[in-house]
Image: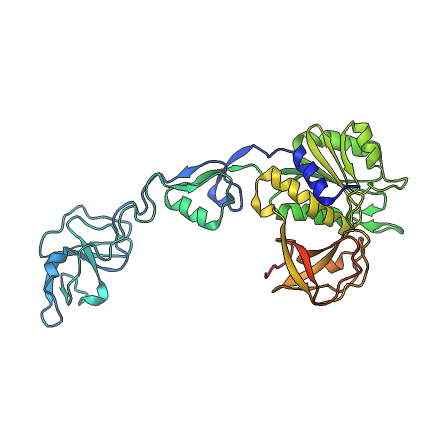
Length: 407
């Protein structure tokens, strides 16, 4: 049995980041990891433009304007957004201009419509305007050649807006990590099928596949089977080439039907460890097969998700390069009592909010699921703890994107 920290180090030492890339349209790029430098190919704005509705003109023409002595100029043109005027303003003339429109030659300022008489052929101005006022200048926001997206960044909606503003329609991203998932157990029945006596529905497959998709991992291989070592070997051998990591659930303990030890022997896989000093999920099993990580999780649902969060996520983080998969550890203060002693390091479902930690209702056994609803953290209870009392300060690992996190 090894510590959680040593198990994590062992996994990370054995795997390398996925290097495949893919050119995707912007509408598919949110949340993906950028794979190259992207620099602006144009200035933004691409021309001097007006930030408001009003009149473009030469400021010297209205240097003496006032309410008592307004200055009247002829309207030489009307420039709508998306159009342009080829002419040049001469002294004594203004151009009516709309928000976002290209500033005409000869103009050095824009006066807002509200500070004029809103004239059509001629327009009166009631105050002077300094040169270069009310102009959005070419390249003011983004200059051509500016780095707007470095590699290794999770692409946000802001990135998409900037990329689109300088004309990029596609972006090169890291390919998503491809995962296989196999749930084993003679007792399992797929949801929707009649449930025979002595059997249970397969919850692990849907919980883990959903969690991976939620974290940006693409589950490309999804199977369930009974406790048949030969069949499990056949599935892994067939699917391993098409994935970057392969997860299984069940068959990892010491019972006569715990087949994963035999599976690894038949495959000739390199065993990394068996048993991690945590509860639940102690008998987690890890191996390398054809240079891919096999992570064999407990069959008990809460133990399986605990194994996945504490060991699977760090592995997926390294494979993907996606910092959103980082485990986030924080501290909180207990509001409730957890009376069970913990001779072994234990992880307990919890709700964290505003620095306070609550224990959800319902069962906390490794096979129970209902208390996961609403949980957004795991309390890390150290080995030898006699229990937790209200006011105790505790360490937690956040289940980001698992439930609402209000910290």
